[in-house]
Every structure is written in structure tokens, then in C-alpha cells.
Length: 190
Image: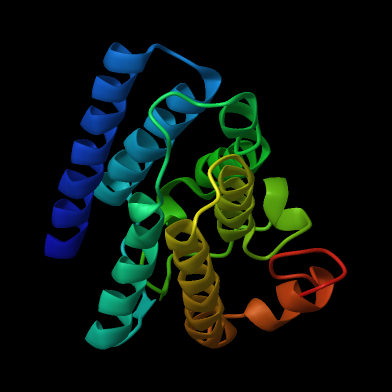
């Protein structure tokens, strides 16, 4: 529970930073979606269901590092047309997954019940897919070596997190679901 409160506080700070961004640079669809993402994350961390099965502390720590990586992605203060629109589909998928997960949401691998509706009907990890898609869109609008490094580390960390999450979920009836929903992140790829 302590990690949830600390994490919620972290994402409240991110939400406040998003509001400051909106006040300073103006409201855009992208800025509202980024604020909504941070706000939802903080709320769901506070009101989530208790976990029945969790990962070891070092995996939880790694998951939090992974979840924090997009926060160091360089975003231009005032965006080009590309920067302002390309991350939107990924953020939309991410927010849809957040809402669908509801109180089953968590940062670190744990079992809080199986969700198989909404975007989880087509992808096993649509929240991660949305985050990767939004960062890829941002990368097109703000390409630099730092962002490339961040997105590569983030993608690698997601593969690691998914393996831990699916290991825990497999102990809790996930196998039937994974036979019905074949793709983890990208249809036809993985």
C-alpha cells in the first residue's frame, strides 16, 4: 500500500506539471490527454483492488523504473503539427485501457483479476501498446538520440514486465485468455 501512495503522489505531481504546461503553452488535445493519463494513474493507484499474487520487490522496483521512463522523453514546449497529433492515437488506446482496467490497474506485476473486455479483447497489453505507440508518434515529431534511447529502453523494459506479469497471471487462469487473445502488443507481430 505504501508504494501505491508514493506512486499516486508521483503521478499527482506529473498531473500538476501537465496543468502548468497547459497554463504556459495553451490547451491542446495532447496536453489534456497527458493530464488525464497522469490523473487516472494516480486515482487508480489509490483505489485499486488488493493483489492476490505479486512479484518480488526487485521486480516491482524495475516495473516502477519502466513506468517512469516515458517521463524523461523530451517533448518540445511548443509542438509542430506532427508532435501535437502523432502521439494521440497511442494515448487514446492507453486511456481506453486505463478506464477498462479500472481497479485492476497496477504498475508492478500482480494479480487483481482478469480483464478481457475493451481493448483487452484484441491485445493482452493494450496499455503498453498505447504507450509505445504514443512515444513512437512523439519520436517522429521530436527525433533525437535521447528519445531514441528512451524508447528502446522502454520497449525492452516492457518485454521484461510482460514476461513477469504473464508468469503471475498464468498461475491465476490466464492461459485460456491467452489462447483466445494471441497478441501481446502488436497484432501479427507479438
